[in-house]
Image 1 (cartoon, helix red, strand yellow):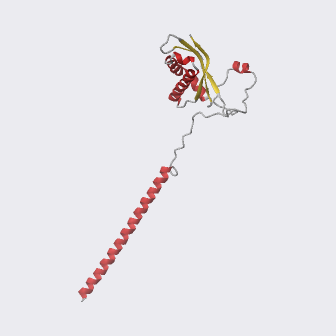
Image 2: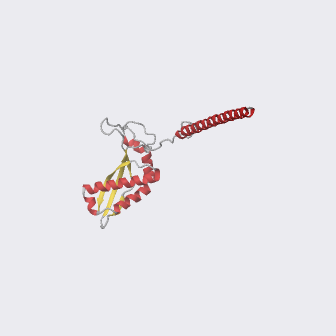
Image 3: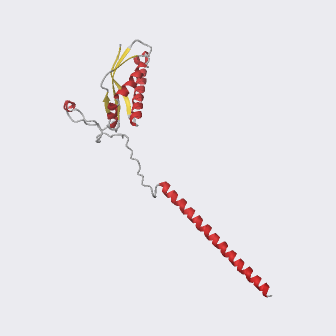
Length: 203
């Protein structure tokens, strides 16, 4: 009888011990899951930059469009003689484009043979931008590379193209693209909108 009682007591104690271990295991699993969940949440906060990120956003330092009448801190300074010759201060009109247009004139003429022809073409060129003065600065800075690209385009232009308005428009577009390619390659930004013929001679 006493043996049976002892075995019953032992069974009860063993069952209680197993239940306690089972509960302890569940508690440990729950704590582990919370830790993992908290770690995941912490990772998400760090990844989103809300916590622990000291990196500042990179400032957009590209040229921007300049509205009429707005100051442009990057505009190259005029020579004193040019300022005196210009007379009155420049005034923008109220109508038309809302952005200011600035022009750059290439210092020397462009002379080249035309494709498949003995004819020579001689051009004086200018180009325009509505972006701030950094584009004008870069045009001057990289004029040598730009000239090389434009001369290559002239040498690849058929003679028939230079006698028609459509042909001249295509030439302007190709030249504009060539200038922007150089500026993008050198400075990471183009910004030139059009090329203008100041002088156009075919010999």
